[in-house]
Length: 273
Image (cartoon, rainbow, N blue to C red; front, top):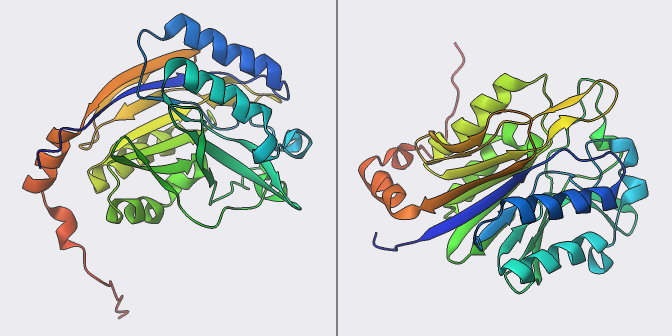
């Protein structure tokens, strides 16, 4: 297609200290100073990195998106490195509702968009839906000409949202997560499947390490190409960053050769016999 698009991606895997926002600010600052080696096009953070995966802490740590310490912290990073920021997620409050929200900031540190998690995980003893409200729609952002579909953790179980992004022209999916250690097969399978079935790059970024009450994050963050192959990954629980240059021209060429999305039918009426 001759669009000659590429993105230099820097994604941070970290273990959030539950309920300690300023400690987690410090962790992100330390990892970036230690591991960054150039000014990336985008910097990506995991889900609820400010306070950890502990829904009982969500409301007491919620912020107004328009007067947010977290957004200001991310703004400073964006301006320092002249990078887009996909800010993982933090808990926001609007009127009487709370949301698990991913902020997006441009290279000038301006908040340009937010995505609130559309599907809330409330199974296996977890009760996210008791503390936050589900967002109402997908959000796709244009990052230097690359249309990017945003999702958070449990959203990965819903292929419909990714197909909607692909139909809208997405070239990149980002799933920011705090995925549990006890569910390795779904994380491995579904992050790869969403990339393969839509012929789209996927950044699958999750927290690592101990949470509380004998619960752990899985780690094993990965950047996956449009054929489902891992470009780079952090296989263990360590805190750090992964890097990748996403070259979109080969993806466009592959889509032109393998036009399987054209075979999707308008409806799939099931006939019961």
